[in-house]
Image (cartoon, rainbow, N blue to C red; front, side):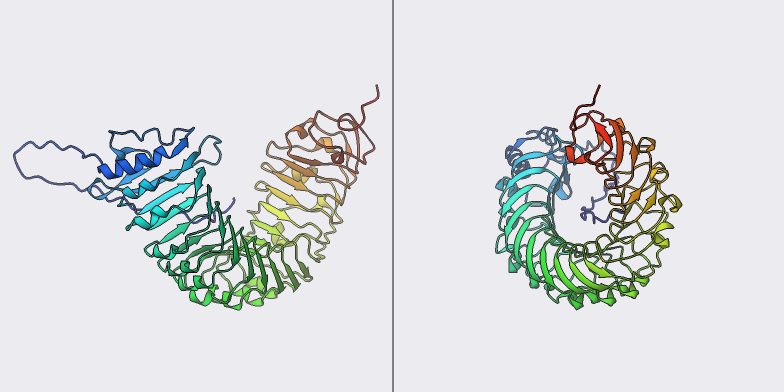
Length: 485
């Protein structure tokens, strides 16, 4: 039961069909007009810039046919093309386009929306043709290979309501003129290679509901600009090199902010207690920073939070009692916590799918831990604790487990009795007291570590290195020494 926290692009509305009542006795033959000649030329020029289309995404784009009926094309007034929507499917390897965006696309003058999403192999610089489309409102060119700097005059696209260039290879600093895009509600520049500082001029874009600069190379402090925003619901700044403290002006976002993601930066200081006022918060990620001190008691007010990640900091006991009806994912790993047991508000969650409490000072017998549900579990990491007992009962009650890590504990069970579901791709139970034989089902794993246990017998055919199996009692066969006849 995973939450989808991606805001969908604001797709344009299609004008309803207008029914005309003709009060005449004449017989009237109605024919549909073909799309405008300039639109056809512009679209075919775009197609000519595509060198590979293995899934036939553009196969319906043929000269002499009505381009309003082509795949991904929408027309409105006067049969003019208004949107291009081309979506690659990430689960299909051949669902992509290779090529460049033809400048002749500017001929399609009535365009208000361009959606090139997950096309993967579209290359070239920022498409300057966008400056020549006066009605353009929505631009989503995501997950491709556009590169180079953004134009310094990007602020001239003043009419834009949404701009997403996520998942490309843009470099350089984010131009200061971006502050002139005051009509934007979504500015999504994450997963590129932008450098420099956080563009403080973004505070001029007061209507933002979604701001993402995540997974770039931005540095310096996060500026005190957030009092400007009254509707911001998603703020994603993770995986940069931001330093300093969490800016106090973020408090002004408390009434509506649902996603606050600041993980994997160089932020420091204590976690501010005012974060407990974010009553609408769904996701809070402060992982991979240098936060110290204790987690504020005010966190007990975060009753709607579903995803909490405080891992890889230097936080200390005590951890506050949370008043949540159901947590979906929790990661408190690698701090200075001594929880002793898995919190009751975690055990009772009916919707949890990811639990990561590595090195959290947990001292339980796993046989006695009875979570309310195990069906949805995808990820469990209980590594580097003092957990005893067996994980067989727990894992045998999961159906979609992808990853189980429990290295460095005192677990004792027969590995052969483990029901290995087909979804399981990573297993690390190294440095425990596990015995028995290694099952053949490990061949389907991507990662495996059963080293330093008491396993014995011939290994099934596998692709793993020696380090995955060393330190056991009597394992043999590749990649270890041959079994004795």
